[in-house]
Length: 255
Image (tube, helix red, strand yellow):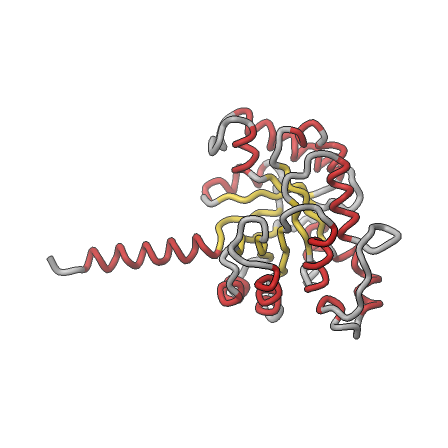
């Protein structure tokens, strides 16, 4: 574990990005680039659970902590990526406190949750460090609930106060879509939803996160108290780099 949860609890601003190509090589490249954390995306990314394993192995020797976004709050999905060695789990479309509690149940062993016990897994050094992993799992494993529906806006305080939910992570695309203002991140309705999320998290002593692709948005979100910040993805880094180089070469092409 790379102390991601403890750093967040200490008030640090932590920077991350998405990994959505399913590639262990790009995971390693991004892990060495200077981010505090990366998110391996099983919801929309190109990779499978097997690819998650390879990406976690590639990230192991980098300073960057690995989080996995699962497709749903089904316990089996959560158990599996934690057993592989994920330091945290993000769950999409948490709607209410019941959904938040279901996420937490998957994150933690009894008596705090319902996570199944398996010693011979990568997270425990294949059985060598199970007791240490078990004793520190609550303090180390980061639980991230995505705030991206209209329904959850009616339950922000309850979700934020769920023990085991550490971060309320705003999903701008889905949230703006549900609000009927897709992509309008400066719209007053979207801004009100962001502020309400930040206020609920502040009262509960929890962190707020968000993903964006334009660094010009950084200051505004940071001033609202958002400290778990993601910008870009491995796919966008490759695409933008390729387009930039192709454009430069085309400009140099003799007429």
